[in-house]
Length: 314
Length: 241
Image 1 (spheres, rainbow over the protein chains, first blue to last red):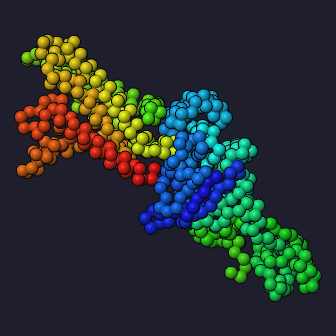
Image 2 (image 1 turned 30 degrees about the vertical axis):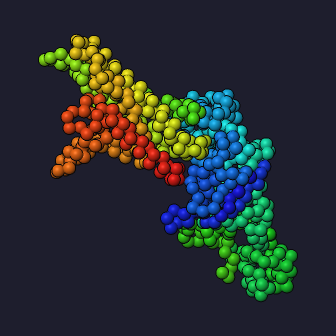
């Protein structure tokens, strides 16, 4: 189990991580979600003892990372696939890592086999594609057969095949009963891999819950109404307390379900061409929760996704 | 510690730069010894003639030692290293030790290789290594290279980038130590305490106005290296990797 208690990191006046507390339960895949620049990587570096927190602490099974004896046997991590000397072969990279934690030399060949790099083990790591580097990084993380695994944006920049491979791999690790803590800025990706979610924005905790609960809580359920003449219905909906906004020729109604809207339409004698419930997407849920905490806002006129999330009347 | 030494040995020798540096250092020193031997006229060749290229070898070894740590920062393998072994002091001491041993070996091979080369060209009784001063001049090269490599690793750890560290390590012994002599009044006194100048006196004899004897000079050079090493360890432990 990984536990962060009041974790804080500031660079000068900038607070990268702000009093962050969460826990990553044992034997599950926990997603670490937040927009770019939310402090995910900084948090992971602090968990691994690479960066020193300004305040608070991060503990792995009750111990600070720096106090772990032969830490690769307890925690495997892939923070950046490019943390490899380009002139060193993949095998040599794993060999020195294995030696540093007194792991048997044959373990190097085992992990190369697991990630499918046996054929290129003798090649310079600098010549590897991102996908191959990522596999090498995962091989390094698995060297000590650790029960806890940390991955920082493992699918970033990968092609679909690579993404699928990583996704399957995470599932396999979870099935083996390992604790997996994986960060991403893509909620859709997390929904496929993670059972638990820790969501942060601007270094602060936004929520920690199961993925299901998070999605259910966060998604706004709306109803799309289309028809040739919606003027009266619109007024009636407003009077009934629903919030309404235009979308193309139709209306998107929130705060009222299909049945009520249908009855209201009948009362106002409105012809309807469509009356359909819209389940909010994960991306929308995520945007809604973290919308205020994105560090670098882009102001694009009529931006389709974030703008439409603001309920009418605001 | 043996585990860490083995780890750092694997890391050092699975990249190409130490091999190139070793070849370059040996080529330069022994090459210069051969040139001096072949172009020499007037008087017999002495031990000192054979050691003419040691300064160049020292530059190459300094660069090699600095790169051993700065490339770790450049490619962020230092993070992978601290992740595998969070005890930073132990890691850096092990790395320094491995680099120093390599530097010592390069120094000894360069010095004796140069001596053998010159001897083979035109060796006479003046080329014999007999006195303590002769032994220091030849066998002492490995010691000076080893200590200089410690300084390089320390500076590399503090500066964390190759170009900066190499600039400092080349400009300091070649320029700064000599230019301080230009400071009016105290320049010469400061020059007497400059670490590489003092190390040179250990190898080539102390002369009448040196403040220390040869072995005290080497100890002083080692002391400077130790201070820098400790400073680099303190900083590396405090800083984010």
